[in-house]
Length: 199
Image (cartoon, rainbow, N blue to C red):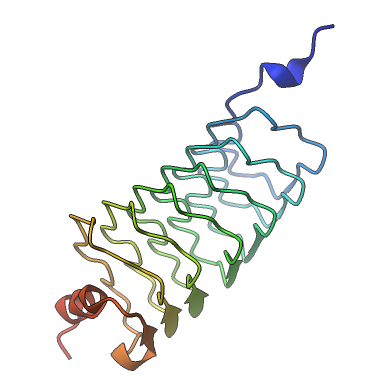
């Protein structure tokens, strides 16, 4: 018997540019076989509520720009996301300028190689805890937190940057962040902060 779910392997660009969309409920959306969710909600400027609690991300490898420029999103619950196979997270939350709550405590980043601009211009975020992030395979972190102008506290206690070749502008524009409020065991993190701040 024909089953649609066996053929749905990509949801990239699915809601791309739906700039007037306010609410999305994907509680019954079957994404069991999906591997690519890049730019899925890119440019959903008016999106306020998004129900993703049942979204299956077990096989996803690409989440690049998934929520990029969702300008009106204030809260995002991704506690159910399984990200053990994700390789690319570039610009995942880039431009989410109203986002104030983001819990990524269940994120598994052991396979991720790219986090470029991941939180770029999340200008309303005051605190972010990424202590569970495994960055052992990451090679790109350029401007990862650039433009997070309200950021006051950040926990990067498990970050390792030995393999990273590009960290330019890592904390650029983080005007509210003080070096004493950065938790990290990686001295390169503090060096990046000093390069972006001259006070």
